[in-house]
Length: 451
Ligand SMILES: Nc1ncnc2c1ncn2[C@@H]1O[C@H](COP(=O)(O)OP(=O)(O)OP(=O)(O)O)[C@@H](O)[C@H]1O
Ligand SMILES: [Mg+2]
Image 1 (tube, rainbow, N blue to C red):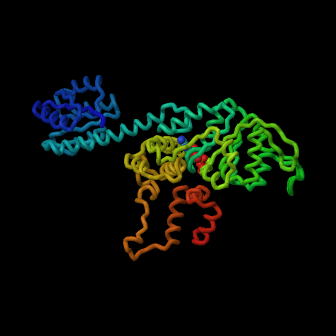
Image 2 (image 1 turned 180 degrees about the horizontal axis):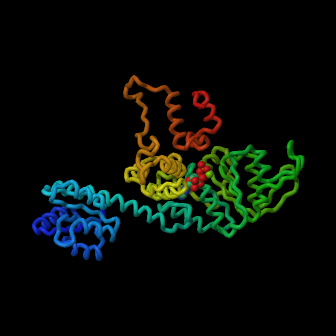
């Protein structure tokens, strides 16, 4: 814990000594003075976290000191001690920005508790400031946030390979930022002014994908009414991002291999080969090595692709990045939605850090976006988080002998509903998290009468 500095302002010498004794014993660095004037002198030269002052002082009194101190440092905390016992004075002190008040006579335990509570608040405030400052620091790539060692290693690799022609394979679970890294590689490279063309290999069947990438000639297949230039040609000099490369079929794998080995493409239905100079970045959330072993992915293509590998760690393995990412998204969505939320409660930060993030950074982004919309105070609180984060994970009660055993159907339904909530009702992302494809999810939801 940081060594906090507390200034005690009390003209009664015995009382002053008593306060210093109790507060130093709590481990705080303590200084004391016997007048408001001396207190003001002190705060000009030293940064205090808290001032504990008597209201009644000769010369500048506690209330004037409070106002002056707040003008000097708006974040300084203040506890007012008042002997008059009137709630009115205490209330006006709070209105002027005091954190708390203590009515004389008080016992030392009461004082200890009030100080403890106030300092916990200070700790929280400073933690938030720290996170915000970290965010302001310049990172290697402005839109990729992260200070964990693993992300630093990623930034380093991007820097090393961005200008080379080497093929890069980006691996990582869904939502870890593969596309973000692909874009960073291209837009920070010497090819930045040339095209960057992303292709989702999982979205098209093999024939369509081949024609999309390599082009086709008129009459190559039904519907090919004219010649079409492929993306490889269109991207000449730039980058093609082959997303979800693990999903391409065996025929295309071979064509790819040729394109990578010779730098040549052959439009569908043509005998002509064309030379292209394109940088390939591929990404996958599949275990390509295991696929190679099982014969689902060509070994030679795998070796062609993995000249440089960038592994993006799951968010749960870099907990240190969670707070800073959450603040990054808070800032973004707060501005976007015209809200003035600029803090995240300590409780929420803890919940975020303890969650297992199956949808990684994308899921965190969705949760903060949603919280920004729902939050009514100036700070993200637990109330605006989805239940997946605030409730303990579901545990089957079958073993406990409970009579209230849920059917598998009910469990599936609940689970699907939770995952949909996590992904803002995005079925494509939800199906990825559930490990099934979109049409299977659709079928299950139909069967469970959820559509
Ligand atoms: N380190 C990061 N800093 C800031 N934003 C990030 C970071 N990582 C991911 N994001 C954000 O999270 C979202 C998901 O990232 P992205 O689309 O790159 O993930 P992906 O790995 O390609 O996921 P998928 O496998 O599902 O396609 C994006 O909105 C992206 O901007
Ligand atoms: Mg992606």
